[in-house]
Picture (tube, rainbow, N blue to C red):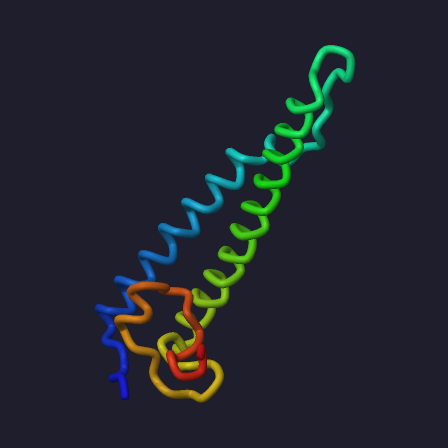
Amino acid sequence: MALELSATQIDILHKRLLDRQTELKALDAEAASWRNTVELDQQSVGRLSRMDAMQQQEMAQAEARRRTSDLARIEMALKRIGQDEYGWCTECGDPVAFRRLEIDPAAALCIDCAR
């Protein structure tokens, strides 16, 4: 069984969560134009170019969905920190291992519940 997190460990993970949140928000703002509807001149652009542009748009939209999901997980982790519930499995209540949180600071489940 994992041990309870120390205040120093929580501070380290809290900073990592905030840094990742800032990074994701910046990426989302930067990539906003890629998610817009593809509008190409059908007369001057070939079929493959249109397909390529549509594929890039779909990939950008999928990436935006992943960022939105990651931001929501980070928000929930920050909320757990504020409520002194961070580092505890939301499913069984056991401590979440620090090594697991180092890999994914937004993890809400212990390794057993995550399986």
